[in-house]
Amino acid sequence: MTSKITIGQRARRFLILIAALLLFTPPAHYTNVNAATPGSVIINEIAWMGTQADANDEWIELYNTTDQPVDLTNWKLIAADSTPNITLSGIVPAYGFFLLERTDDSSVNDISADKIYSGALSNSSEILFLKDLTGSIIDSANGNGGSWPAGANPSPAGRATMERIDPQAPDSDANWATNSGVIRNGLDANNNSLSGTPKAQNSTVNLPPVADAGPDQMANEGTATTLDGSASSDPNDDSLACTWEPGDGTGMLSGCTVAHTYVDNGVFTAALTVEDAHGGMSSDSTQVTIHNVAPSVNGGPDQTATTDQAISFSGSFNDSGTADTHTVQWDFGDGQSTHGTLNPTHSYSDADVYTVTLTITDDDGGVGVATFKITVSKSVLLGDADGNEKIDFRDVVLCAEIALDLRVLTFRAQIACDVAAPFAVLDGRDVVRIAEMISR
Image (cartoon, rainbow, N blue to C red):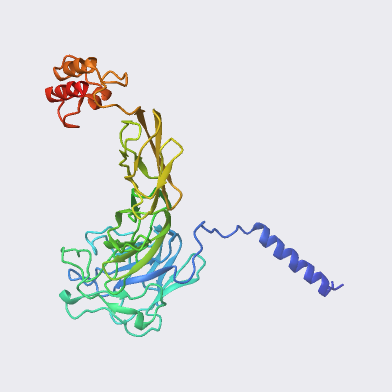
């Protein structure tokens, strides 16, 4: 009897077969790598003509255009005719190079290869593909299949590599150029300079630097602030020139790390511009917060005076915020005050010890204060050295002893005895004058 299998039975058997295959087939192995996208790693330079030392010393350079390292494990660099057919391994660093040398490590004699491969490149034409481990095409070189669009091979000494012009642009004949012969790197097997740039910036392209103005800062006005752009870098290791605009209108400063003094408080944006040796530029900024500093004030020394005597005051102050403006206020301690001058005069009607206060206020609210003492005695009667409010021979004797340095000179005696020529040397003339005052 013939067995009949329905369409439904066939479908069920097919599904069971598929499930079994999925169950017993080991999964494909994928290395944990940064996701590759077209152009993330490129074919950057090709020495299809070899070197001056040997036409067989071919080499190829890859370049990582991203800011993350890329794992090349199980990637392929393969020609359309399958020669060469290179299985890659290793890491290409962020903004870094990966050098492949044919046969041995002497094609570029002074730079170690990241991969040694076999398989010659044609001197007339090749199509090269760079594929990731899934087989996706990440980049190509001479993808249109014509003659090599760049590179030179007129003679051994004239061999020059084919370099990518713009690493961010796709493969096209217009995006390849021959090494300029001016910018070069590396040596061949005979230590001749290569007309190429293995593991270095191509002679035809420049990658801009990365400016880094550093973290935000805080400082006091009048204090030198360091603007530090030393963390700036260049993907091609070019030397860098830096300029700073500190943001306070004082003009440009040259240097990657500079000191600048802000003379007033505020919040400033300090802008850094970085330029590499090939004209590539980038910029960054940092915020600088400057705090106000109160003035430092000096009211002068303590003084002594007598009642109704005109006293001269001489105050001063210093403010590190040299752009600040200021108000001046004096409090003489007797209920009287004045403002607007650092050099006022004042007299006291009563004998006492007074505390004088000088206050300086800047336009940002910073306040500086200085205090000192004024000791005021009752007005002295000329000739009354002993203070009994009359002139007699006791005063003559006292002043004579002071003139002869037999007694310590006091403030009161200085005023009372110095009658002949006030504020001059106390001597016999003053004693004689006091005696004459008694005889009158």
